[in-house]
Image 1 (tube, rainbow, N blue to C red):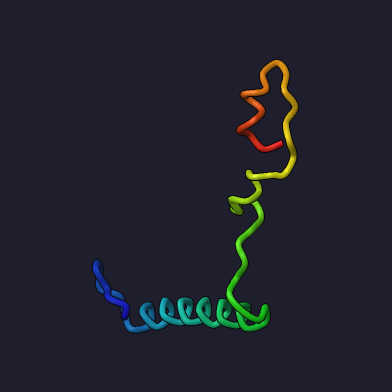
Image 2 (cartoon, rainbow, N blue to C red; image 1 turned 30 degrees about the vertical axis):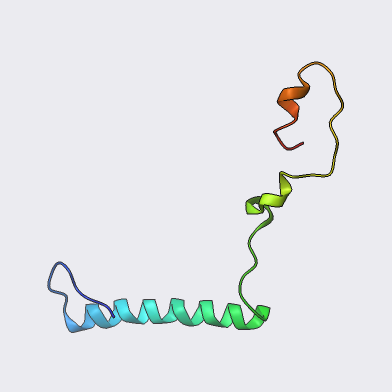
Length: 70
């Protein structure tokens, strides 16, 4: 549902805005259908990238290197 909160758009302006919203929704649906399912999150947002299997060696400032990814 779309509701005009401010202003008084003409029917042409309202139709243009709705066409843009509908085109964007159709493009998103087409991209989702091509990929075969929902979008997979990017690698940078994956929390498992922080929990790496690399073991840090003890030494100076080892406590600081233990938290931040390599």
